[in-house]
Length: 513
Image (cartoon, rainbow, N blue to C red; front, side):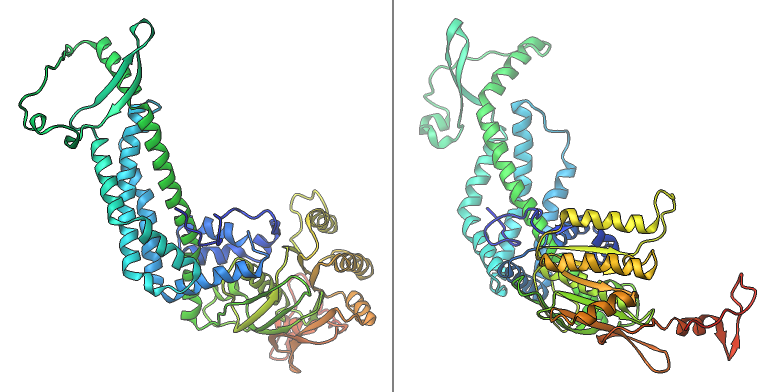
């Protein structure tokens, strides 16, 4: 039995084709998203992280998961009930006494206990399938429900219950054997004690043939060990076969639990967003070429999960653009916008919804981030050295059709040098069919790229009102030679028209030009 809720024809495997380094986990603040998906459940947290970072590069595979997720959003109680059954299958084993041994008798006993537990949960799955199969429309859930109804029929459970009762050996153990070399026992076979194999006289206890028996003295330890060895040899084949059956059923529950956990975690965060009134939509995944991204009301899902108020969304149209340069006012929402792009790309490619009213974009072969970091407290290297080292690591791993998000990169040196380093890096990446989103205050860099007037480049700018207020909107616009730092200075150091002296200053500094 196979669940196949993450892939149509195979089980889930952590992707080796979709490339993601450790940068996005920190730079995009994925911890916040995963905590919202998990709601305190460690297994949900771990599962969501594995699937989120193992993106798909096939639009059809993404649509397969999206259809299943729509079913989960429409029928969350049924999906959670299925997940609870798989949870119970594993939590029940905690109450088993002892540990499975390597002896056939111990293996058999553990397998019987496990299968009795698992088959009770399989009955629950069958009951849910009988009651709710008609609710689901997706190909994945329809196939799962049909499989549960078809393979877990009443005859199947009757046969299994009968076998498990016999394997408890409450009526004793019947073995047959042959004499081998030196009169040693060989060809041990476990025989059924079923009364159906005996005649009516034997069943009522009359007319039976002679029998031979012996009894062990209660303190005959050697005799007990000898009989134990005979018993183990007799049940060895049955114990191994039953253990394999137990592992098969256990692997089914494990995979079903894992795959349902991803969708339950998606429903958890979807409920939080819709309760708050934030937009969500199923994105349209497009082939990796030509590159592009179109969105309406796209927002940083991690930001809105950490604040009470609704956050500002952005519209975006970069279809056919391999390079997107984002400039503009300080504290204008550029970094937040960049995170929203990266999060939406990851969520789309793992089959999730995105936080937007409309979203369509080309898939990527991987996602990398290069955000500005704090100064190295150990003083092992300078900021520029650290930035170049991280860029070198990205260059070693990146492939065509990947996406890289830069945030204030190469600003640790002067503008001329930083612009030249960034310019060469950007050109090399774009020439290698890699999409680049670059947030920068380096006017020399942005202006030189604008001067080239390449059709594959899109320029965006953080919006600023004439009075200096920020709308936190990012709109199409050419780069400007200022980041409007004087707005922040006046807000931080001036009040009621009076200049406030910063701590450590002797006199008021001049406003930056």
